[in-house]
Amino acid sequence: MSRLEEKTIKSQTIYEGNIIRLQLDQVTLPDGRTSQREIVKHPGAVAVVAITDEKKLVLVRQFRKPLEKTILEIPAGKLEPGEDPRVCAFRELKEETGYRAEEMTPLVSFYTSPGFADEIIHLYVASGLHRGEARPDQDEFVELVELTLPEAWQRIADGEICDAKTVAAVYHWQLKEMQG
Amino acid sequence: MSRLEEKTIKSQTIYEGNIIRLQLDQVTLPDGRTSQREIVKHPGAVAVVAITDEKKLVLVRQFRKPLEKTILEIPAGKLEPGEDPRVCAFRELKEETGYRAEEMTPLVSFYTSPGFADEIIHLYVASGLHRGEARPDQDEFVELVELTLPEAWQRIADGEICDAKTVAAVYHWQLKEMQG
Image (cartoon, rainbow over all chains, first blue to last red):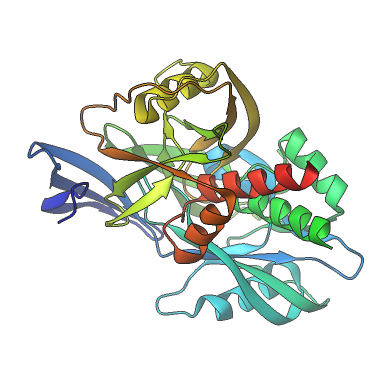
């Protein structure tokens, strides 16, 4: 056990939902005292950076109940049990935006909230885009939006682009443009 | 009500923890059907991009129970009720790393997981750093780590830097370096 590690004494499921599971862990801290950790278990997700031939980023406008507002995000979705993230990336891009990609290249994976959740997002870059028809999930209502790089920065400033994966996507795109 | 919006029929608190609250909302979807949303309420947080005079990024190594591993993150912490995020940024940087900053400039704010949580992180850039003594919270065990930009990219590749705010911080730093 490393000098920073916390050891589980007891783990209890508080709530089992459709998407998340809430778990309460009693732990021993590195100094021997005990504490409690509230943990949200999540299946993980993928998100896709898709830039069209017209140099526009593909986004979806979507109402997000936790925020009580409609925001602009890159296409994304939860992993099905056992699903390959790359396969999920192709699927979600197609379902939400209609775009079919020829290739999906892994860019970076990150945990969104390591303090209380295990959600990981695998970010992919799509290439060889072909436009098609979107087919969102039954309870998913999304609108396709395409933005140039300056427009994307403006939406960050305005707050309509306001989530971690989409901000990361715009940063990545800007870096790629500067690297030529 | 916008064409994408979901209307709350009923909202129920499932669990009230020390850090998060789990809420279950019954909603009306834009097409009139009903659905259920699992929502994690969080007080919000700040995170600090602090680069020393020696051009090193200030990080903390910390065990994260939800991930069951020790990772490298930029200094961060939850907002106290009613706390000004800028004040929180000064405080968390000092507590976790010992560094006192002369200035805190807002960089960007983002939601970490808009699909199931309302957590927002306000990212600040610290300047005018003065080294001092760290004083972490009672149940917080952290180690100070300082990395150059190439070292930070390497830790992203290795997976030791693996959370949204820290990846965003490295992207920002790289952009700033390229912009000169």
